[in-house]
Length: 253
Image (cartoon, rainbow, N blue to C red; front, top):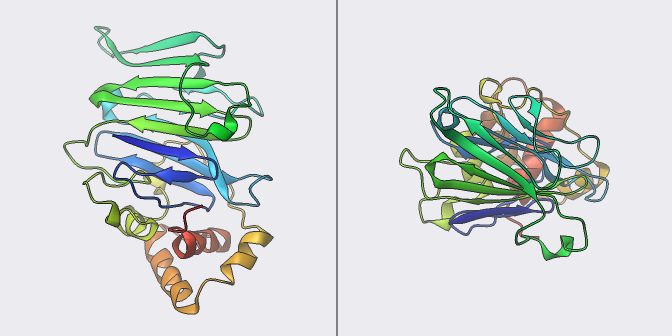
């Protein structure tokens, strides 16, 4: 089955749910003891602060500890393997060898071939990154100017999984934003981060105004959840961002 992200970010989980993650920060996309796929979500000037996907990081034992990162096109965005740029030109590819040199743990191709997840983007030049990984995982990442779209195709992992793409248990009803936060936390814990740093969290005027429309009981519940689900000492901006996700995360847009 497939999990898809597009825009700011629209999302369909493996089980067909439609949670939304509007706040800035680093989130789990797929969390498993061996497989780690993480996303960096951040608002743009075109989305009035609502977050779009601005980075993907892939790591874990299933690729022998290598780190694959994909960034949007602007500001010198790159495709990186272990911090080194690869596949900078359309039509290029890269195979990542196993540590024993007897094969490959992953392959990456950068081209303009593939079906878009968002037809509204069809007017733009295409930069598609196809990543073939162990466990039968295939990812296509669409690199636009200042954000990414994403499609992950895979089977459920034997040890279980969770994240923005859901827990892949055949039940869409438990893939709400709040339920996902309760299971794995609202953001990635410091010791689990694949990204080298955290982005500064911004909470825009438009988001502040919208948060005022959250019913009082829901907002109070959101605050309790965020205190529990954010690790360390979250900033006021991060707390507000988390509450926004809980208040509006199941609003399809």
